[in-house]
Image (tube, rainbow, N blue to C red; front, side):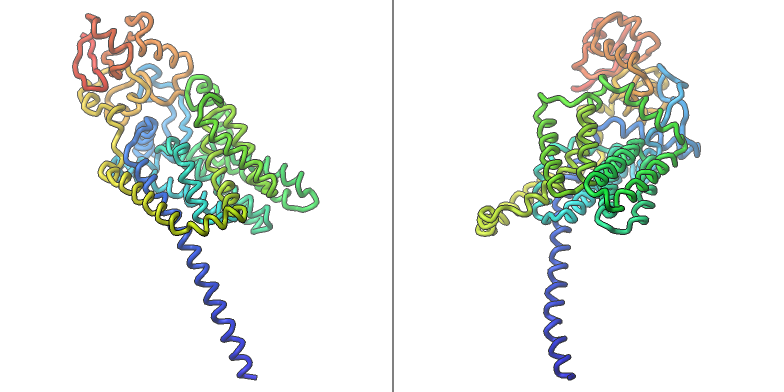
Length: 481
């Protein structure tokens, strides 16, 4: 009896050991896939090109200093004192803390960590959909040229992380996981998300459409009821904001003030190859998700693609959701393709290693200037030369940077387009291009800082009312005589 028991155990031990080694190898493969994307994150963190980052840091610093969210504008002279909603106050505070700890490199490092979180969540979703680590990394790398431009230091980073996190929770309900726990976590996710960025309202749409799709595909089962509960939890979570129900008005106001004016709020443009590729990937992912009966993933793709048709700012969501679906699809190639890949495994491994080495070499210089403002866009020396307290007429991007670097200088314009409104944005855009009556357009301004390529820079060169104070190869600073 003992001998037989010992023999049985001895036969099972190698099997258990093999299984443990396979699990460890699988975990290492996914860890390597995640680390393989690190160079892309470093390249993105090397330069701060998004203007919103700068004014958001300043708003966060003001919020910390006064222990309250600013309710009116204090940075401009054109709409000074106008009531204003902070639609990303939580992100502003976080990035301001990072700025206080490490300056702009600290802020860039925080956003790089968030980006790494996005990649981890996308890879986690790819894994549970059945993708291999290699396929997921390759698809992610292939899609990165379409997405990397969106991965700037903005509160949208939390949006890109929250959507795959939401899908993981809802899919857990769909597959019979911890249902009430997932419902509660969905509400918690929405509550945190809404204070980081009001795009959290997207959670209600994704959860609601997921419930509808589940009802159609499996109405006799109870899963859709739990997703309805998750939808309600997300809606309640979205009210857990200092603005309460006001976030609905805030979101609609931002859209109304931005549509047709701000690039990211323009509708889908079929003439853009980049947009076409993202939407084509989305369509392919929808077909795959439908055939595999992935109700939650399908619903999220449909919601985000509908949003992407209305405004291109939703296209990154389409790309982020398409990556794990496409990775799962290519992970099970037809037999002839699989045999060919197996026969050329060594070649592909060597090519992959060389490509990875090249990416690392390209990313390495970015480590020397993490968080550096884009020199061609933000002329730091000219900003430092602006006279104290001078009312500055400038572009939205330069206004963003001035708000952080020179809070003593009120600006005419910055990236908070919903604060200024369409009429003022259009009027200032005409003046910036040197059109119309400049005396009227520049009334109230004491300084002008614009890129050299703008028409206003050329017209002021011959205007006796203005004196050139400083210039570099990218921008010019004029002061009223």
